[in-house]
Length: 196
Image (cartoon, rainbow, N blue to C red; front, side, top):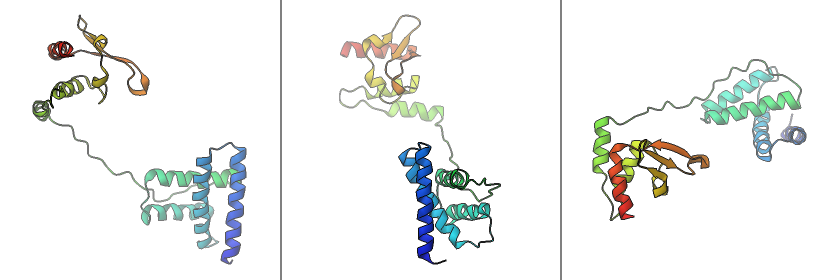
């Protein structure tokens, strides 16, 4: 089969894919991404022996992606889902067992500082100008606040009577939450209120 006929076959199948996706109301970005991977797979499939099953051709392509192109896990998963969708919804053929070499996520080593390292860090943070940088770092650490939350605190967000509370308004996802106000920070909050 010469390359012009192959190109016509591939593009005819892509047009068919777009028609099915339009009927299924798939997002344009999904359509575009799926068609890109399906086109790559079809060109790869033409290079494979005709005696190979569709599953084996897909296995070879996914393995090539993992080994030669060193793609991310999510990329390989989207490519697999695109081709599986193509066979199932466009060609009306169910794929059986596809046993390809899959890309792997890198192992990440997590590190948490020791208690001594944490205390040294808190001691080493210095105020910048007249800005209470050390106090803000202590608030972040003591209550697990997100980075901008101490900066958004208002006097009315603090409750000094028992039980002591800090009201975080409009936090992540614009949700409000309440955290305990630690005894160790009460005096510093009161000093900061006087300065403010």
